[in-house]
Image (cartoon, rainbow, N blue to C red; front, top):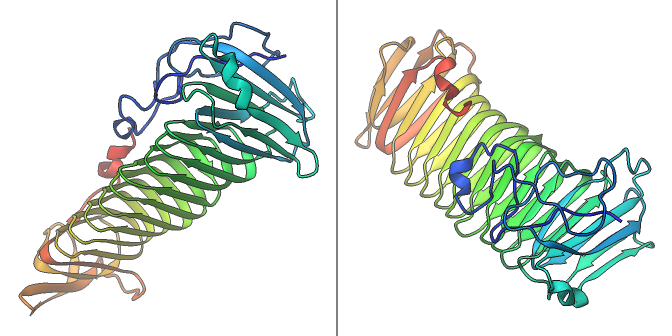
Length: 391
């Protein structure tokens, strides 16, 4: 027998001692980060080495039932629940063969009758653990310890939150309604979809990432590293501290897109929101219809920026070499920027400035910025000045 952590809050999972970098996007009711309180269950004994590293918020609850399922170490977890769910890997010292799945359900004292509709079973033929219920108390919690390589297919309804940490698998699929998804140090082909909850990515996520957040859902990211990243929001903020990818496509209908240090081929689109990039190293294409653009280019691929109705601020490393094409209702090039062969043309009530920055002579390296109804400002900025998201 093993004892699970218990005591879930009304809103989400606990982050324990973890520091949420994007706390301003998480909100006060999302997760109780930083509250160093630990809860144990009232029954059963925890196997050696399986003590939790963090605990969910809220009053302590009772462990209602536990399962120990013999499994293949390379199977899959299928979960369909209306309540909170946390998944973390088995302790390798206690279970060196990675051949068990441990399941514990916690809730209010006297809530054992609610378990009648809960199914927990392992199908040997398809190597799948299924945890399913439509009747569990939404404030109950299910905690799973699974082999490190277990694939995950998880769906929560209502306000049920999902937390997955330190898992390495081929496929991880998560769907929520209004609950928050917390992903910490996950290596997988990852697909996350939420109709109204937050998506919080902590530590580093490795692999091809696909995240879609509807309504006012926000997506906040510490670090993503992989060949392909696709993230979209509707009204919510999309904020990422580090992106190391071969190809990324990030979009928002009305929310802002705020990025720290990005590397690779990056495409950004927002209809009504603003776009900010603190440091771009690679090819960058960013466009917004009504918002403003604020971009620092540290190392150059091709850069193409457009704001149909807003303004654009372009900051560049002083030593950067590039061809320039800046067009807008007004164009302002700071005198500290060394531009040779500068030419000025007027068209359709706007101005177009072209030239070479620092004798840039490679035609494939260029910066284009177009704000037909706004102002394009071009400035020099050191790398150190770009570190405002590195706190």
